[in-house]
Figure 1: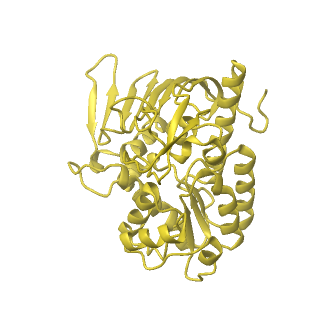
Figure 2: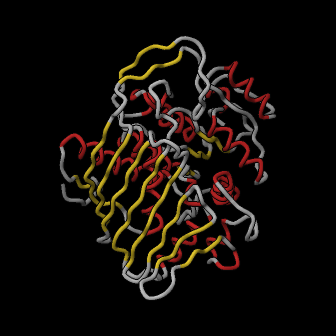
Figure 3: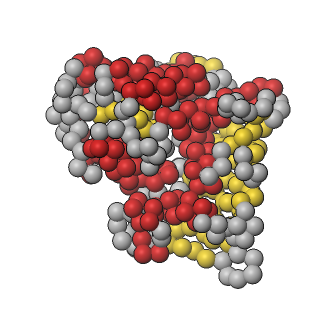
Length: 379
């Protein structure tokens, strides 16, 4: 495991839950790595990436480091012949993610981008519902992803620094999850975007001491820093299959801790879900009563059943999505390489979100609709 913060810890505990042995961790410093290894009960801490890759017992490496390290670390891991799971965004630029896609394909190694939100059981069920035509023609896709952990000018995290987090912040950090999820559920990629990005807090105060993601604890003095990345985004969307959409993204919405909400409106029915109430989905109808489906494997299709670890009435949440994702990833690891059609998000999926993010950034700068630059797309 590279990275020992909030999300790295989730990776470690999820792997343990599904029976995967975590050999060791690589922290931001040897001292931090050693302290976190002791807290997590992991047997070893590595002093460097070279040290980690020299351990012949390591078959898979999870990358949960800051975004600027994803490409160089993933390249080194693939070159060393190890499977790799990388947090999103996959890179700082689409050029970087494209390179990783090519290297992963040539290596024939398992590669995954950590879009875990796909693996809420009801999101798996939603994908099957849309694919079966039960909503009819998908027409409108709307929603939000709101958090409040960067609401105050005293809130700080490395993601606020473009050289570490990238040119987009809220869009890359959480908006990428929403857009990947909508592409996954609807089966339609985002074709064009019209984006308005806003930075409401132009100056923040960086503590001189370390800061954990989502933590409100601060230590030491602070230093004033100008902020260039967006606090919020409002984005209009056009999908390849003809659907239209709109999404709002915010890291400064008071009281919203982690609310990813979507509604998919079809010609026959609608479906809506909110990550803060993950065990229920709303199904809307015109001529009969609306429905609330409470997660129940007995009432879902094969994919929803496969993602459910517990029977109905026993709530499954954020942590469980990692377990479901890694069960799919490690099935291919056990088989020795990626399946022809991987049942999990790969580097190619991570790269596609980078292409969408590039279009969003360009749209915000130029104030116009921008087509996502895939091969064969019109400018």
